[in-house]
Image (cartoon, rainbow, N blue to C red; front, top):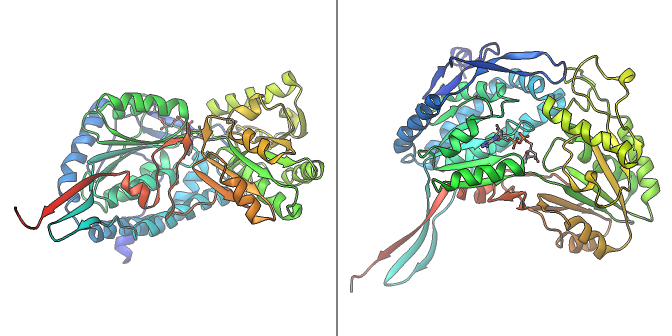
Length: 488
Ligand code: NAD
């Protein structure tokens, strides 16, 4: 990239606009989010109105006419330039993400590493036509045609990766895309939208920031062809209800309550750091990390003690602290929910082996939404900490003895996002894992992802999938294409 092209792509992180039809568009009213590490206000961002939504949808529809006619290679070319532009601004974008999402730099850096990998790999994917019949008389082929204007509704916990995983598939398959970030984390998204405006034709990629009333405006809009939503199960149900009125296509990625089953034959020293990190990473605010650990009774006491010792050493600190491993809870609303769950410790008499209600004398910083990493030893199966998705740094470690029974307990939930089995005996673990009811199942790992593999939930954790060729198919209508070679 020449220096003037690079200068043109340099982002300024002080002012924030909607991106509509490739214009940086202010709104009459603005709002701001809060830095969760300091509780200080972040800069003002737009509050989109119905008019902004109408403008963006109209621009998206107009752009769709030409965009869908481009070849895969041409669209992939635009996405690659867009990816290069993100890469050229990686430092500023990572810092902004860390600040707004409460992610220590290694964690924000990890999100961007996944983003870059996702973009670079997804552009290589294609949906080939599938020839079902090619006889002397006729051909029958399945084609996949784009839908129109797609909308991605995104949560605050992985605000960039989860949006990119929708955006790249939507654009590559010939749809246009409106990105609606969470009101808690709009900043980095708006800046990436600005880069898009310098690269894509007008109306192809747009970003709208707003209050909680913006999502419903988009799900209700008759000009939107598809909503791809990631967020809580409760909101997902509302999205589906709203989309029914205009029969929009819908993909829902929702909550999880992932179980990890640890067998008695594991190498404890090797498994402890993995299971611990996969439970506490981003302070538990990831849909698909471990939320319930089931440990075989023969190794339970040793495992619990060693897990507590490991987690105790993870430094909780503001996102800007270079040594921070775990940051704050992302926002005041979630902080309130998590505190309420910690209050249950005393009310229910749960046994803590680490953490518990925060000690006001011993906070990692004067301000910020911090909660101490907490491990609850063997609470009852019907307790809130086992049944609910905490979305905070608190996890139950439960005891098991019978294989069939632990699988029943792991499956005893309406959630079905991910689940794992850990054992030195791969055959045994695979046999057990295949009985788990979840969209992703793992042996000796958890939260392992690839842009080539679909990502989605079973039961109340999801409908449809993102990522991979299967995810791309979700951005298309399948079309049966019949050709009679001889007219008889
Ligand atoms: P949320 O459901 O509150 O919000 C998600 C998004 O929906 C936000 O952009 C929000 O503004 C928007 N929204 C809110 N009400 C809406 C409505 N009525 N219509 C349309 N849009 C609306 O979720 P959250 O608190 O931002 O995120 C946390 C939840 O997301 C957790 O339950 C977590 O498990 C889930 N999650 C799931 C996945 C997954 O891939 N399955 C990934 C990350 C997070």
